[in-house]
Length: 112
Image 1 (cartoon, rainbow, N blue to C red):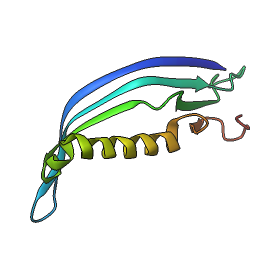
Image 2 (image 1 turned 45 degrees about the vertical axis):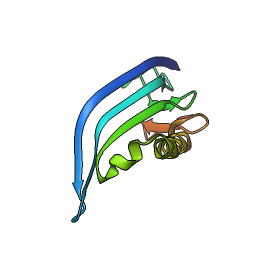
Image 3 (image 1 turned 180 degrees about the vertical axis):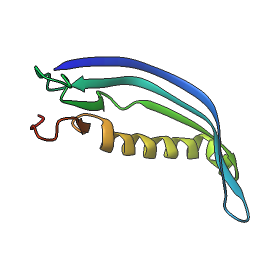
Image 4 (image 1 turned 60 degrees about the vertical axis):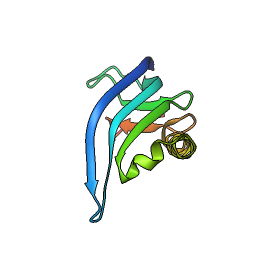
């Protein structure tokens, strides 16, 4: 297969707000740092040439969210650490080796 390792250093201002009736909660900043791996496997001799894709991180990425509204309480260091740990656990359970997101472009063929 062919593996691409992408150094990800993404930061963006976003405007995600949910109105929960009596209060609004939301996120205004998202940042992600880590190495994202794309493994194209298998490589075959006919179209589409790449039979599938596996997406994963070798190590848990660093994710930071800045909250607004009632959720702004989470910006305090103690609560921020709790949220960071929850995000890290969720990402690790989904996308950190040995866990991968597998996409099969050739369903008629077995992809390792």
